[in-house]
Amino acid sequence: MSLEIIIKKGKMTLDDVEAIARKNARVKIHDNTLKELSKSRALIDKWVRQGKKIYGVTTGFGALSTIAISGDNTLTLQKNILLSHAAGVGQPLPEDVVRAMMAIRVNDFCLGRSGLRPETINRLVEFLNSGITPVVPEKGSVGASGDLAPMAHLALVLIGEGEAFVKGRRMTGARALQQCSIEPLELKAGEGLALINGTQMMTAIGALALIDIVNLCKHADIAASMSLEVLLGTRTAFDARIHNARPHHGQQTAAANMLKISDKSEIVSSHKDCSKIQDAYSLRCSPQVHGATLDTVNYAKKVFETEMNSSTENPLIFTDSEEFISGGNFHGQPIALVLDFLAIAVAELASISERRVERLVNPNLSGLPAFLVENGGLNSGFMIVQYTAAAIVSDNKILAHPSSVDSIPTSANKEDHVSMGANGARKLLRIIENVQEVIAIELLCAAQGYDLFTNLKGGVGTKAAHDIIRTKVDYLKEDRFIAKDINSVIELLKSGEIIKAVEKQTGELG
Image (cartoon, rainbow, N blue to C red; front, side):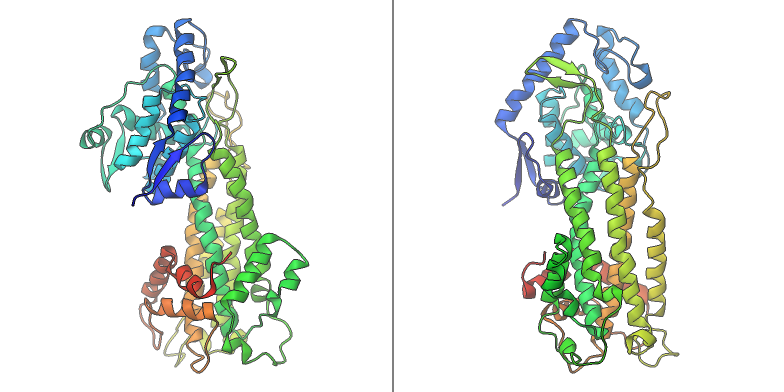
């Protein structure tokens, strides 16, 4: 049975966005919502007939807003804004991101403050349900006046222009509509501006990133638990009493996860009376570090769900008082700051993970064979794997510099402060990919270390993680093409199979 998401005013959740963007859930606008949308459109039509001066409806845009547009040219104006503002360059955004953009944009319109016709909004719903995904270049938004260039590329397909993917095939917008038996729209007064004026690109990327970061936090807890075992660490530092004494929710969650994952470990039990007093910070403080990232995610979730259910156009129409008001809800600063915060927070998962990798491969720190391989010297084992992790972590240090502290004025200095949130969003995607790679490297190294304890069983969760990794990657007895092994674990991590295998034994992780 296929999923269906019914869009109601102000009710969209991250789960809804994921279902539409990644699980191809069908979308429907609630009947009561559709009825209300006609009210704001009727006001636009009335004001145009009355000759009122309305930004972007009967005037030019940005620095050209002082130029009045005659009634005869209002329709041309709407088409021109899409064509002129579709100035993006670079690779297309992933299709799941563009689907999320459309879903969040529809939800915004359903608040009834844009003045779009119901049939225009429903056409975007038709795109989602027919599998039409506009080609949206990744570069071009400064994150104020909304994500103008990306949203213009998205909206072009509505009028049969631009490009789109249909079932993975790239084609012209006109061909995409024809293939799905959809007629191009003729936009009415104000619709061109309403379609492009909003923060949906940065919000869509951030919303999907949050879901990926939550999964990365779980993978980090699993990897750290495996490393703790093979490095003969202690579970004492995960005692709930420690974390209740400093009750940050994320820290408590990560500590509880690691206790569950390493539960019943014969490896840990085998050295409980050893003389070692405390583990290194990368082991002992992993709940504090991982947990702080999780707390950042929980904060960001509130911001993104607020933004997803907000009106971000300009001007806004208020049907109760029959007024339109110009403002700046398109400015991406609330999202830009959070995207930068998330970038820093998720980068730290890789930073501490790489330190555990170093401990695993360094015989002076691990007590294990050098670089986790037999017959060292002839074999280099996991030596260069740690180099790769170090290179990636260093890349993250550059990428984690905040985009939101930058601003370049645009539109002849009319738009003199911008958020650069779209750049922050794109950067965050790169950091997430980097972190996935580093944690996969730790999982690979920890699984190798695990196999050196041939007579002892690991914890219920660590054993499950080890066993699922071994379905894709064999124990490294002698040197082989190591990049293939790394990529196999990266794909396993992205698939969610490691979490699924662990949670089957431990119950759901926090």
